[in-house]
Each structure stands twice: as C-alpha cells, then as structure tokens.
Picture 1 (cartoon, rainbow, N blue to C red):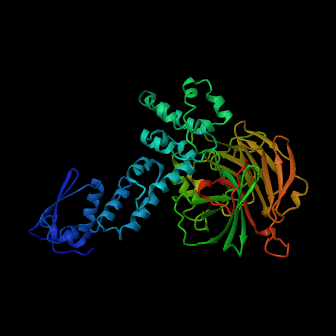
Picture 2 (picture 1 turned 90 degrees about the horizontal axis):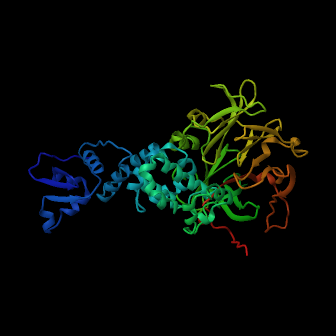
Picture 3 (picture 1 turned 120 degrees about the vertical axis):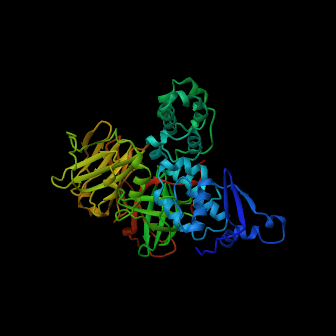
Length: 514
C-alpha cells in the first residue's frame, strides 16, 4: 500500500464502539475512499476532525494495522466482519482473495456459532444462504459431534428451523435430546421451544413409537412446519454425452418414477469449495470413488477431486469428521468370526461410504486379502491417503453393508449385530465386466439393492425381504428425434442415491400424483 508522510499536524479521531483512534487525517483520506469522500466538500462535517463508526472492534483494528503497515493478523473470529468493514470503507478489492482463501481453508464446525453471528444474507465474502445449505446437507454428521453439544441455544434454534436433509424427524428429536442432556440443569428451560422445531406430522411410525410415552411430546404434535424434510433422498442417473463435455441427468424416486432434468455442460471454472449455494449439489457415485458437482440453475457440472491432494474427503474430515466422537467406533474382519482388526493393518484398497451421521470404511487388506470394515471411520489417514484404484462395489441400506468383490462374491454385513451372510448372485452376473457394474440402494426406508449393468442398462434388483433377485428394469437410450432406434448403454456413467435440494431443481416436466 502506498504511503504518505505521516508527520502531520492535523489528527482525525475515529471512535469505533469502545475504542478511540488518532490517525493522520491526510493519510487516512489518501488511502480510504470512504474518508476521502466524507471529508471532501464544503459541508460542516468535512471540516470536523472526529468520526464515529460501528464496526467489529477486532476487525477494524486489523484494518487500521493493514492500512498503516501492509500487515494484518486474521482470525476466524472476525474474518467475515473484517471483509464487511473493508467493503463498507471501499478498500476491499485487494482483500477478497486472502480473506476468501483463509475462510475456506480454516473453517470447521466449531466456528459455526461465530460465523452465524457475523454472516448476513447480503454478506459478500460468504452469505447466509451458503452457510445454511452447508448445514442442511451435513446436519446428521454435524449433530453427531461433541462440538454440536456445545453450541449455544441460538445456534441450535437457527439450525433446527432449516429444511435439513434427514431420513427421519426422530433424528432431529434425538439431536435436541442429546443437547439438553449435555447440561440438563441449565438447558431444560429451552426444551419446550426446541421441540416445537420438530416437524411432528412427518415423524415416521418407528420414530413415534420410541417417544410415544412422553406426554409432553404428544401435546406438541400439532406444532408443524410445512415442508417434509425427510423426503429429499433420490436416485440419480448420469449419462455421458459428447465425450464427457456434456451429461444428461434424470432423477428417480423410491419407486423409480423418473423426472428428466436435462443436459449439463462441463465448466472447468466452477469453484470446488465445500460451501456452495442452494442451486448446487455434490453427488458421489460408484461407491464413493467418483464425484460430480452440479449447478442446477446454470446447467453446468465439474468433477469433484476425490483422490489427489486437497480432496472432497479431506475437506469433509477437516470441517466435520475430525470433531466426531470415536468412542463408539469398532473395526473388524467381515466374516463369520468378526475378528477385531489389528492396529495399522495395511489396506490393498478401500471405500469411504457416507452413512447416516458419518462415514464407513470398507476395504481389503494388503497381505491376506481379507475384507474389513471400520464403523464409523474418523481417523484422518483414511481420508487423506484415499487410494486411486478400486475393484470393490458397496452400498449401505438401513444398518447393512452390501459388498460385491472382484471375484463376484456378494455378501451383506449387519453393522449392529455384526453378522455376515453370503448372497447368491443372479445367474450370469459373474460373466459380466466387473468395472461395468454399479451397486446402489437408498440409504433407508427401502427393501431393494440394485445391481446395474452399464453395458446393457439392465437392473438386477435384490429384494431383501423376499431374498430374491428380479430383473425388473432396464434403461434405454433412444433419441426421440431420430428415425434410428440405435442405443448405446456405455453412456450410462452413474446410478446412485443422494440428498438433493429438490425444491430448487426444475425438471423438464412436472408430475402431481392425484
């Protein structure tokens, strides 16, 4: 920053809340357009040597240091307020990049209460909508931390009012119960107010059965908000068009009713920070090995960085998983004995699967080629050194992992009972190309596991309750504008389940069930 001679006679007094500063009026007007305009002209105010401001004290102090020395010390406690003050004083142009990079590099959920006190809908560095979308998408993981239990009640109220991406309203109730129980004496007075943020009419029968004896909760069932937060998980298909510079996306509900969304174009300039707006989604597919970021408004996409450098998984661990409690974690071999996994067991390969309120690690050991699991996984090494080769396919439905190996062994592992059960594959699957298969399911409230053959578009559906396979569906790719019915199933890139901001996605047509 350019300097002027600060051996001055005229001082300007700046009063900012509880602090009073004495600065060179000539200097401050030469480097801060806000003051230059304020003290130019013939008005009485321009001839005065005192001005009163109302900025965060730490932020303004850091700004004055920067203006006088070119140096400032930044903290998460006031980075948003720092940039907001700079914006108001019209000196923010050179500060956006360092502030933006600092925030995204250092944010973790422990700073969420501080961030919520600083951020507004109109904030330029990062706005309230972006923070709320992050909370909605990752609420279950956030609520599964000791950090969440230390949040002030104001933060909890803000979070629970949002359209959280959850599987059951019981999960919201449980988060309140755990928070209150952390310090019952001082928090029980907030219980009534917080329980009104549970959307009781959308509570599933299983959740209601767990709390039906609580008379106070019964009386609260009439308090509701309109949007059903539990209906935000869908199947998504991604087809490759034009050598992956364009893709086609369809959304499917639980019963595989399809809503076409349209074609999306590759945009290598899309930012990949963990925070994004409500019109953007991150979709992991192929058992978490690959990922894509979708902008539903702009109809653009970019691939997520999964296995190199600062990846999606390293950001997730730094921001959330690092604060999760590992006391309930267990690891074992996935077989009849469920023997405990030795420490420092090297892995030949492994998968990270998002499950409910955290991540699960499923892999194969390096030496004896045995399959293992870590439930849930919190150690940073599993998130940092993610492998770049994979042969396993896996999905999780309710409390059970379904795993398909390179040798076409298919089995299920119940994470609660720690029980193993081998499942006979549908006839002929072992003759298919292993790398052309997709194994997927909804995470909960369903009874089917789907094995998709990308080369033919056929769906092999395993019905859990009937313990039978059905070849029930097939995806066709026929151009309705062409006279030729030729189709090419190699274009099917992904079929997976994920949370989606369905309110912000516009399909090519709408459907209402009567």
